[in-house]
Image (cartoon, rainbow, N blue to C red; front, side, top):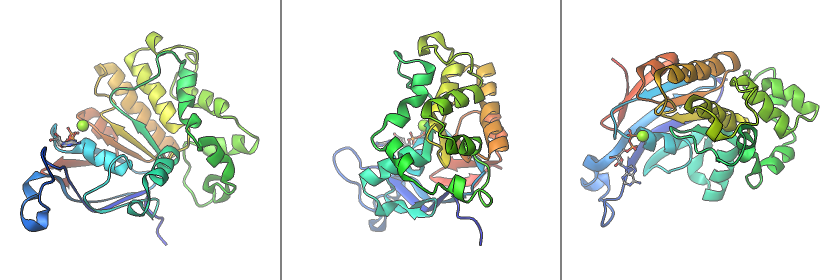
Length: 271
Ligand code: ADP
Ligand code: MG
């Protein structure tokens, strides 16, 4: 049996209501021209690294938000680890989002008064986050280790069996992204590139199945941008982290295993 994809989109359509009222559905001939996404079908396997490029306003963020359960499609299906998200209410979606998906955005939204270490720990404070961790007696990463790919939490599985704390894990992640010497620095004392590295560590703290990044290098200079691209590629290559990255950067896109272009509401291979 083939492994269940991490993420599957089937004929996803997204249409925003026009200001002043809902647009007519496509079946009535009214909405087709205003649909941002027009039937996106896509499968992302464990360990994949997908770049999505496209002109500004083409719907890349809209698509990423739908993948990340931050938004719902107008029609079509989204499955995360085999589970149809349409059947879940907002609360269940929020729980899945917190535990299974990590986000990195263009602007890092770090808490200025907190250290790098504390910022990485923030997602573990969400209601239910730690309790959920504890309440999951048979974590796939531990139980089915032989069958599952190595993930960023693989080394953690052993640590966790010995009771690795969230703080230990946050330290380890910050070391992994090259900030082992900056644990106690506050955002004001870190460069833009370092901010994004903290954001990556924070996105990984709850051991997501999928990392979604929206223009993660969009506000970085060339050198920091190349460093972050290399870090993401390395996490994918060495630890099997599943990645979907939306980017304007040809250099970042080229570091991913696959590249697709979003244009006119459709995804296609880059010519
Ligand atoms: P990209 O990330 O590729 O630049 P977006 O997904 O942000 O594109 O936006 C695609 C289009 O959808 C834009 O024309 C934008 O104005 C529109 N759009 C995005 N979000 C909303 C919203 N909440 N309501 C109405 N229109 C929106
Ligand atoms: Mg965008």
